Image (tube, rainbow, N blue to C red; front, top):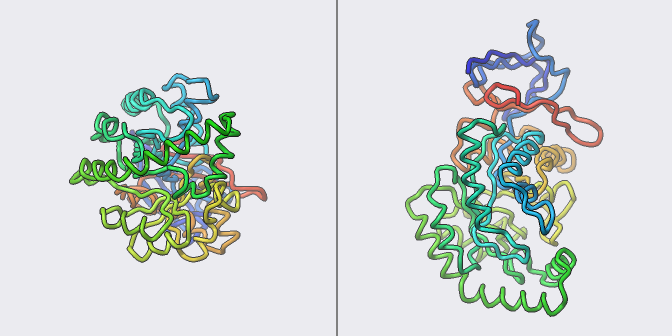
Length: 379
């Protein structure tokens, strides 16, 4: 599609600075950056708002909330996908990695049929061009579940899969080191008796001891030679990081301690953290505050996790609370995650890059998304 558009009177956030000026877009790409005022009658006047690159979200659980709006309700997959897509784009996220479980370890049911239907409908949405954002898949492989390798083999390889994370959500380690906190949350959410939660915890511990190690080995063997980006999840100890690094994993996703983040940095791994942690001022499960990682230079990228709007909000908050320059925090939600998964055509405002852009109005309360473009077309 031929497009020719100028956006003027904007604070343009590039990789290194914030410029007052205008952008010229043509045929889906950024053509030029003009500093200072420009007199073009048909230009979109940004009225002094920020222009930032379209956000790149490597980990969102948002679709799961759309497809399961109530504990006993399964929403039609395509309808849920379209609603999810609209909500992500409204948060300024133009590149979306839908994070889907393969082998669920929690108490609430997550149907594997839903996963397969999601992959099929996502392909239909991409082929039919009725999704506003560009969607990829992030498969979350739960190594503590016996069915995981078989399920994984039935949906991979797939061209939409650009990221795979190796997860183990067994209570008592990683994210849920505090078993009492996990039990209290699950009992509240699912109205379980003490007997029921104790049975679940005992079964989970047994599975972890028998299955997690062998499943991890099987999965890595299945992925050998595929070249897909790999992430470890909820690294808590130095040993977790060393195990991941030895397996060739380059991304430490959501480390739960400073110790683990420091070990990841020492190994040259990149670190992704959850943006809701920044907005809330800490972890809902008692782990390290992302703000603390940022202050220590142990943060490379943010992901929305379970709240789409948290990415942009979190980036601005890190600038306000930690003092990290805005170009650097915006890079954490755009170029940095894009590079982690090999998407080199997006994530920064520079000539030749994809014209995925977000107009942001900074209010006293939070940054507000007012316009979004993908490939130079407003969506």
